[in-house]
Length: 443
Image (cartoon, rainbow, N blue to C red; front, side, top):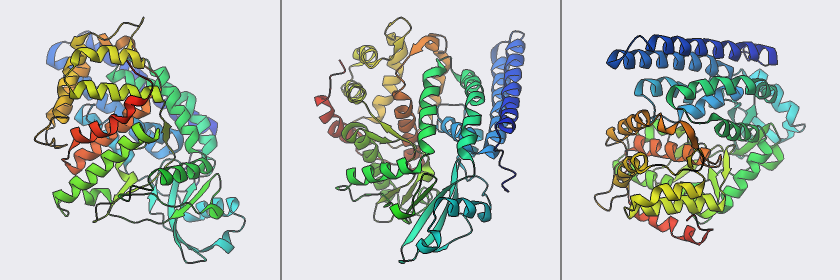
């Protein structure tokens, strides 16, 4: 991919995303009109086919645009398991490696940001070993011999993000409406805030230092150190921490005992962020982790972090306690206290919440330990429940703070499923949610 292939002008990106909005919108309207003439299995089949076609359009366009366009699309793709399998498979393409931008383009950005580049670096590998939505990563060696990873933003990516936002709101709102009738506005506001934060690598460097301090007594989690003298708003240099790639870690090359250990470490890492530290690593893309044969997990990419309000943490703690102790009747009220209810402040009816609680109770059973990925029916059932509750869920109200918390939890469960991890989930939840009882009460 050349620099010219990166659409950086506001007008160019307006045309690209705006055209996609139009195609998806026309397709949806056509499907709605055709649906009036069909019913039963034929209507469901045609609707599924149309959904897949729209997902393909979105992946093809967003995947080549990078910036906010690709990043926002990736966020939707993390909801695999809650979407039809065919759609999840299409959207998962956005989580794969993006095309690399040639090094001569990225080197200009690197030298523009670091005036003392030649004094700092012995070498930087021309071939990027990772490429993402707003930048790519190159291995390098400093003059003092330290091996580093250098994360460099694409040219004009901040302008690309600004150019994308208005059209993306329409596009993603249309896509979400294919699966749900929820109010997209709070979701979009939260996504937009996280996108802007990810553009500032000085902020990400601060996030890394904060997270490293929080994990200082947790040797099973490895956080790369920041090389401050080689870091700017658009360049982030960190020590290079290697590990087993996620796809290899999830393969048959490694014993299930080790995969279980990795899974438990990921689970605890998330619980600490939510209930203990109040700071959540909120980008659970499986590619943001690497694994070691001693059970350690390396955690990368700290651009998307979520500060957790104490009241929200206490609310999740209360929900978990109610699920573990089979107090299904308490769930609608606990959700209401968190700010999750139907329009007008009406709590959810039990017939909406009870089926979900029944599913989650299987994960937190005392014995035998639940194995993620063992039962694909749980995801199919969740999707079926979502479909059956469409009409009742059309007026859901919820605080924007839970958007990235739920995204992180869904991503975590997906990663545990890839590892087919089994562990003492009930015991860990009880251990980490008990301290949250001291936070402002959610009930």
